[in-house]
Image (cartoon, rainbow, N blue to C red):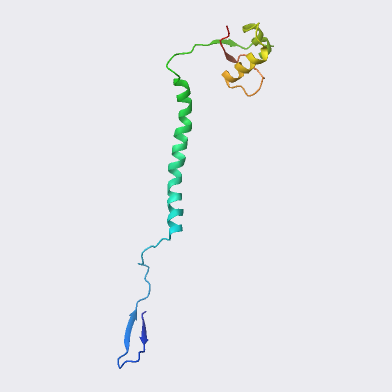
Length: 126
C-alpha cells in the first residue's frame, strides 16, 4: 500500500510525492548511547577471559620464584598432634605462635584443625 501526499503551494502547479511504506529494509541506526552499550556488552567476554588468565597465572608466577628451588621438610600429622607441638619440636627456642603462623601460611591452612595423615610442609628455622 502506498500513500500520496499532496502539497499545495501558492504557485500554479501542485507537487505530488509518493511515500512508500516501510518494508523492513531500513538500516539500523545506533545512538551514541547505544554504541556504548553495544561495545560494553561485546567486550565483557574479553574482560572475563583476561581476568581469568591474569588471576590463573598467579600460582604459576608464585611457583616460578627467583629460579632457586626451595626444599621443605615435611611432617605427617599423627593422632593427637597439634600445631603447637609441631612448632615447639621444629623451633624450640622461637615463639610457637610465630612458627604456627608460618606453618599455616606455608600450607594454606584456614584454621588450626589438623587431621591424622595430613602432610605439612615445615618452614626453615635456624
